[in-house]
Image 1 (cartoon, rainbow, N blue to C red):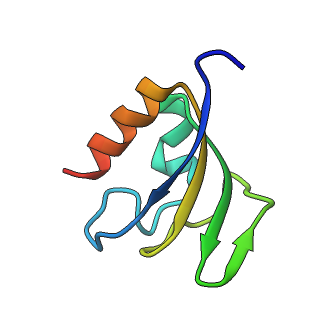
Image 2 (cartoon, rainbow, N blue to C red; image 1 turned 90 degrees about the vertical axis):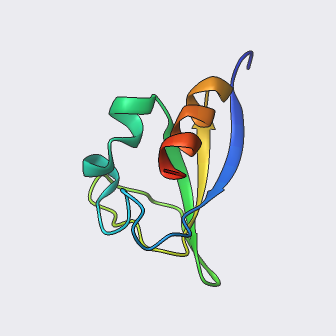
Length: 79
């Protein structure tokens, strides 16, 4: 698929703007055009990610989208 990538993004900081929010309320899809495919939480994988799936500190998000959109999301989360 041209101009699409699958990458992982670590949710590290406790004060991160998406920690404690659902996928839907985090704005990942709406604001950045990126899809969360899977979440790795500890040794477990959440493969059926729903809009009401909560994002927690330490999660590893497997994302699909345009590289520039993923970079914008990563920059937003680094603030």
